Amino acid sequence: MLIIFSALLQYSFVISELGRFGGTGSKAGQFKNPSAIDVNDKGQIYVCDRGNNRIQVFESNGTYIRDIGGYGWQEERFDEPVDIWARTTLNIFIADYNNQRIQRFDKDLNYLNSKYSNAGADEAFQFREVLSVVYSPQGDIFLLEGGEFKIIKFSPQDQAEVAFGNYESGEGELTTPTQIDLTKNNHLLACDAGLPGVIEYDYFGNYLKRITHADLKYPVGIAIDDKNRIYLCDPKKQAIFIFSSDGLLLSEINKIGGISLRKPADITVKKVDGTYHLYILDGDYLLSAELRIKE
Image (cartoon, rainbow, N blue to C red):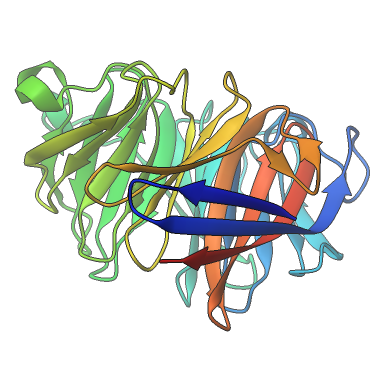
């Protein structure tokens, strides 16, 4: 158990390890350079096992359920899956980086369709490598494009509506974006390793603010809890940072279960019975922890 106090805001964070799973390899339950993690409404964990070109699914206690994928460009195959959105009731979206598409599956991981760039569309709405994907409660898709560093918003009717974050965005210009997420009040957050920190936009792509801190080095993974607190994984600092929605640093987590973090790449947060369960990709391991926040 680790207790961290934030004197400025009189917060305390009590974190306890629940489990540690995985290891390097290609067998079921092992990983090679996993890049993203998400949890569905049942508490099942989805991991982008990037180096093995597959998606693995686990129970909340780390028990392996199944996987899909393998290298390729056909349906249900991947070439470096880098991000996943699994928290919706019916659909799961996977950023299939080198195949330059988003693959969509149902809740049981049955393939539904793929989204590719429209070569006939305005250049601003075309995309190549997809770094990250968000599916909003309104049915809109946001994708983070890794070639020109921009975010494109598509309507439920698959119409491109706005592109932002590129060089025309002024203070909202992305430098080295890695992942995006959506707050409870429908603000879009882009984790930007080059800032380093977070750029916040409203739902329509208008720039709102930047969140950064001198202790950040290279944040790559982002998560948001029900209070709009922001969690950033920084593998170069070997730490997880927690910020308030206003951008105040609340906590820096360097150890879980008495063991130092090595290479935290992504995190997801789920509230369970008044506490927060954190699921963290740390190197080739999946960690689960309970976080109690007292104000």
